[in-house]
Length: 243
Length: 136
Image (cartoon, rainbow over all chains, first blue to last red; front, side, top):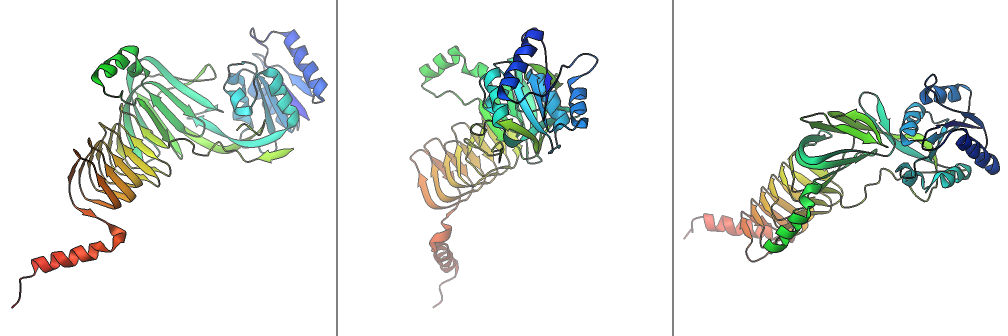
């Protein structure tokens, strides 16, 4: 049986949105209990209630922020399958489950192909499903450690990392138009300012000043951070062709 | 319902890339290719190819299948298949490979050996003969 946690917001709309969702679910024959998080009852609490009630499929319909929070509750519980319907069309979670928009994400719930996926953990208690990043408009120095293998220092403007501990560091300022002209005159090829590393277990990132770590438009932590990967801890419904 | 194995953990793409804006200390190990444009103090090990770009600096041993050097290495280089030192490349240290290519302009200071060719023993015996005083 399905248990739906539906977020109502300014972006999605209120009761009309909820009715539309209920109609779509009913049309597909996958309707179930629908609950809405409030200040008094958070999404995490609602997810725990869904588990207590014995639902086998808990679906989160809302922002990536809400989905990450529910995922943190459902991790390691292999008796429960998580459904994901990102309401933000720009969410990277669409790419993860193989949907384009809300309607296609809802249709995927019906197909019910299941995959075990990783969840990234930022100590002490924040989680994200897919990707997170650090961005600064001006280049800054960062230090990082990949497992116990090596330590590094870099000047960057962007740092992207995935839940399977793949890091991409980039200094986009060096790719500026002036630099390109400079290199074309000196006939030298521009220096590669992008780095890629993959950790097995742990990544530590430190900066001189605290910098926000953002996932799904939410600040989930501030540097320094210790990032680990919880492997295959979530059972999610997805379009199996895509992950 | 079908349960699919997730391929989230599969390592795709070029493997490890160290940009020009990065300095590393420690051991880099990757099953895939490693490309270095910055600076590394420590070991660099790949089961595939290693590319040391122009301007890159490495202090430490480098081991890979195919190693291409356009930057600077201070340390031994073991290339199981082929080692190529490009015109801008510099190696100070011993090298070991089946196939060694040194382009014009490249700098190589050190000993070279070809492990699987059986020539090593031949070289050693010649060196031994050279050292031994001639007996009448």
